[in-house]
Length: 42
Image (cartoon, rainbow, N blue to C red):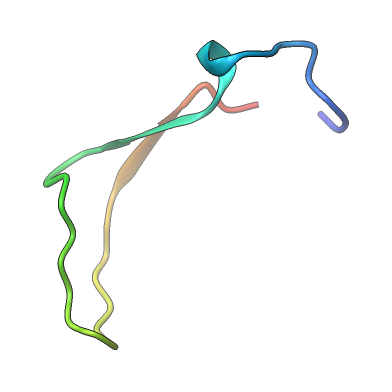
């Protein structure tokens, strides 16, 4: 779907929930894979 949504307000915003630890600490320049679940998309 393109264009603005007819839905509005925070209840319709996409949310991202952490699936493991809620804190991600890595050294500068190091890559770390993460997993997330996205709710209310589209």
